[in-house]
Structures are given as C-alpha cells and as structure tokens.
Image (cartoon, rainbow, N blue to C red; front, side, top):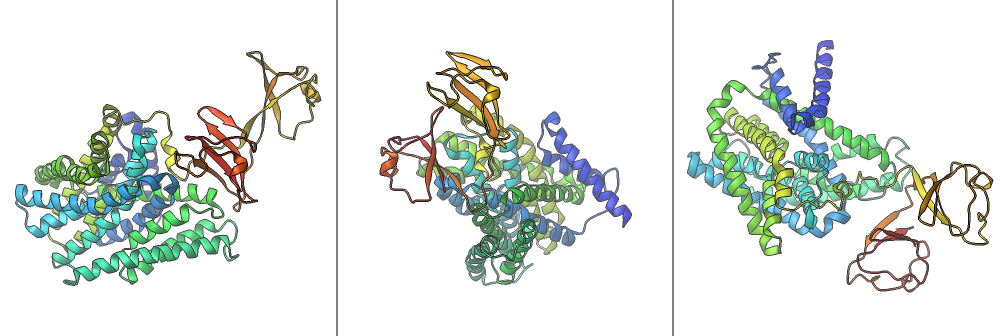
Length: 529
C-alpha cells in the first residue's frame, strides 16, 4: 500500500513538473503526460506491466465524467449562444460525417473490414476538449468571428455523439447486445437530455433555495450530484456523458452559491483527471508494437486531418456563411486525444474486433494530432489572419474574473468641492482607501500627505473591491443594432425597480450614466440588480 501511494504521488509530481516544462520543450503538456506513462510502462524504465483494459476503462470513464461536466460548467453561454447552432451541428452531424468518411477511407485505403473501419471512425469521430482548451488558454489565443467559443462548445459537446457511435460499433461487432440500434439511439438522446436537465434543476434549487447544502460543502455536493446524474442516465439507457455535460452548462451559467470556490475546485479536479487519463494511455502502450501499426496510423491521421474533418466542416459551415479561413482553422483545430483513447479502451474491454491493435492505432493518432496539430494551431491561426488581439480568450470561460480585489476610482474636483484646496492628509476617505495621483493640466502628480488639491484636478484613488453575494448580479450587455435599448436614453428604458445601469463602456471610455445618457450601438452596458 505504501509503495502504491508513493508511486501515485511521484507520477502526479512528474506530470505537474512536465506541465511547467512544456513551454520550454515547445509541445503540449498532455503529450508529456503520455510519455511519462510510457516511461513507467512495461517497455519503459520502470517496467510496470499493466494491460488490464477493463480496469483502465473504469478509471478513465470516471475521469472523463468530470472533464465533460467541467467542459459544460466552464462554458460561458452568453458568448457561446450566437454560435451554438453551428457548434451543435458540428458536434452531432459533423462527428457522424467525420466518422463515416474516416471509416470509408479505412475500408478503401487500408482494406479493413466494414466493422473494423466503422469502429475506428466512431472512436476517432470527436475532438478533444482538453487539448483545445489548453492550447487556446495557454497561448491566450482569441479567434475572430466567435471561433474560440465555437470550438469550445463543439469540442466540449461532441463526445456524446462519438460515444453513441462507439456503442453502435461495439453492438455491430457482436461484442454488445445486438439489434434495436434505433431504440438505443432514441433512448441515449432523450434520456440523456432529460436526466441532465432534471439533475441540473435539482442541483441549482438545492444549492440556491434550500438549506440542505451547508456553506463550504457545495463542491462535495456537486461531485455527488454529477456522479448520481451519470449513474441515473446509464441505468435509464441514456447517454451519460451528454447528461453530465448538459448539467454542467445549466449549473455553470446560474448564479449558485460558492461558485468562486467551485470553479478552482473543478479546475483542479479536471486537471488531475487529464493527468490520470493521459498517463494511463501511455502506461497501456507497448512501444515495441508501435512500428507494426505506424503505417496504418499515419494513413488514418492523414485521412482525418486532410479529408474527413475538412469535408465535414466545409459541408456544414460554408452554407452558414462562415468564411473559408474560418472553416480551415476549425478543420485544423479538430484535435484527437483523451476521449478517443477512452472510447478505444472501452471497445477493447468490451471485446470488439482488432483488440490491442485498435488501441495502439488510436493512441498513435492522438499523439500525432496533439503533437503536430496542437503545436501548429497558433501558427495556423496567425497565418489565416484569424487571431483577434483586441480580445481575451479567457472571457469565453466562466472562470474568468475581470475584476480584482481592489478598484481604481477617480474624482473630478471643482470649485466648491469638499476636496478643493485641501491637503491629501486632511481628506476623510473610507477605510482602506488611498489617494494615488492627481491629474492636473496634462501632468501626473504622485500624491504625498501635504499635496494640495486644486479646482480642475482629477484625483485617482484606490479602494477595496466589493464581492457580490450570491443573490446579487452584475451583468454586461452588448448593445447591437436592433437591440431594444439602442438609441434610447436611460430614462426611457422603464427598468424594474431593482435594476440599475451602473456604467456604459464605449470604446476606451467608461461612462457613469444619468437619465439623459443615450445608449448607442456597440456600447457595453453594465447592469446591477
């Protein structure tokens, strides 16, 4: 037992240090996690003989639950909503089309049987949310035309479709219950959506309205709720990954208590889950067998990257008025990784055809995809002129906090103002506040205790920030042409009594409005309620 605990702690520490060193090596950290697993594996230095695919499936499936949940929980629906239709189309029809085209090419080029070809296409149909998120955030890579939100929502929501296709492939291969494919698809979708929505509503109500969840226990409660949602969906024949993903979106975009604690908790839990999955992928790999499958793996990589994924993306998005540059970038960003390998482990554990050859092909495809596509993704985005340097990609995630624990304030001083002709040390300012500087006739004066404030000065001072309670909400609304507020004065809006327009962000200006302030197109209006 002690040796096992020691091994686990060493592996986790190695992966943490590898993530820190990934920038220096110029490759994604997830790839290093795989190599660490291979280092500990049967053909590595530590010779750990591990080939229990059934146990690996249980561990990886449990880890994938939290990756799927947090993928939804951390998606900012306000920014994802405009591209939701495109994302859902890619994550459903796009995944199916990618899988079927890949299957057809495997059949024609590699000569695999129809069942084997469909199994490979199904397993490799989805893109890897963990890899896409990590690259976008690490390189602060915001993309034009809402592409970052589109990729975030698509890569986070396409695993349920690939999972469903994998179940169909396993059943078709004779390793699962045969027949009733249409019934299985129906129950997977209907029960998957219903259970996810039901558990999300119950979780939000229990955390916000009831007193059953004690303060500080929100994270423990939500972990239990997510696991219960997954189990209930499975028992009813629903798509359990679809359920937990939908539960994540519905709970993550509600103002629930303890959210500031929940986000870093699930962020850490998801990071640990990614380490666990990619380490196990490396541990299950036998490098000595890789040369035999290297040729087929390269062919599959080329089929997906250059044919199947681009064909699906262009066929679906060009009619929706996406530019060719955007389609090319979305096609290139279709990284394969954790979910594909987990589904391959699932197929091998279920006794589907090809056995370990399937796993090694999928593993090699994932390595190529993360190493080549992932590493070149920032370069491709810049070559296609799709990088938006004026925005921050972190704003597309729910864990982004624009405000800090302090606030900079400014006060315009006029003749007769309470601060006029007074020294800084004589001001009666709130506790925890400090005058920093004075703007006077184009000059900046760093204040001292004896600095005198004159009429016409602008005093800049710092104050402690305020953290809203769970029942308070600050919201930013982008005013587009056609918005009901566009062109109207604040007094004309007839807002509810508990809603106040706190500020208007207009270009680089911050406007504190009054009733006569007119709201214009492209304004960002911050409301408080």
